[in-house]
Length: 494
Image (tube, rainbow, N blue to C red; front, side, top):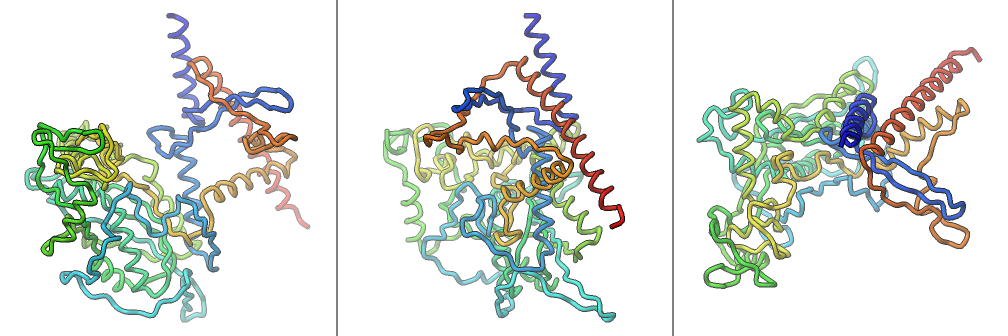
């Protein structure tokens, strides 16, 4: 018992040291066997989490990678060449809502709503880069823009919480949070039609203090502010889902028959998702289940390449992408009003549908798409329902396909190449775990390296973490020395 307690204390100390040194606190241990030589190595892989609450070191690495991606694409002057086999981390105007079906494949009128303003018609160009402007003194510059878009008010707010919680529209706030990325997609599509060129963007979805999501976006090139305001006012999202205003099953839930869900009392099968949409199509008086728009606030800044504002904007844009939406719980514990606001929003999200496959559809008398046994309303596994997300279940970073013409893996490799080149210039060979990849073959065509997962205990964990800390310190010292040597050589006269 005493040895176990000592191992736990040692593991806790190693975790604190790893956190202070910027080393992964959740290393994944693997045993690698070389089939040719018979040697066995133990390798610790970083967990790769993008959430600071899970692993601060890995999340910080992910943020720096996104900063590089943002900087490389923002002010580029040449048209990118993009591989059609795109990285799934690149958005390209496709909403990430865990399968939200906006009924796009069914035939419906494309006529715009009468309550939105008309938009200017402009000739479209295939360019993605901004235009060059010339000042009166002959100087040329190619500006870009930084945008902030918000959602409308759901009730008066003071210090992040509603002044009158009873009148605050929590239902609309929750649905808007779930569907926000799709509204963002509509904005970019509409903007491109009105801007006259193929607008490219790097954007991040973040929560305001009132917990409503808003969009921060670096946009390549410039669009007149008047046009931007028109586009924001004219952008809307209509969600053609079956009605979910009234709960039909609260105390007694639908029963699984072995292939479908049925009424617990009559045994009548509930309408399937396809049948519910068919009924919606047949109803000439049908209305969208939800319509959402942006708020009236729009912040626009012009940004010039190389200006300090550009670096500040990138840091601000990526500041919260590694944080959970609900990460302010500690702050909420000190403010009962704010804590009650978070709890009330989370309660609303619990029973609203997050997608066509959401278990909550059973509550409203409809079988979810591709329904399976064991679905329970209020217990959907969708990310939007989780406390740490508070409605934002999709990706927090949305990037257009022609932003930097590189995948995240390519950006990651570029960063590694810089470090490797600096070390090799000083005669230091950088370590490469990739050389033990499962893709490396033996002479007879079999896998040379076999990777196996290793269950860890506190003693092994402490050893692995301490080794990683020592290795990081050594690499940092070697890299700093190599950089100093490069700088001294560059400062020498030819």
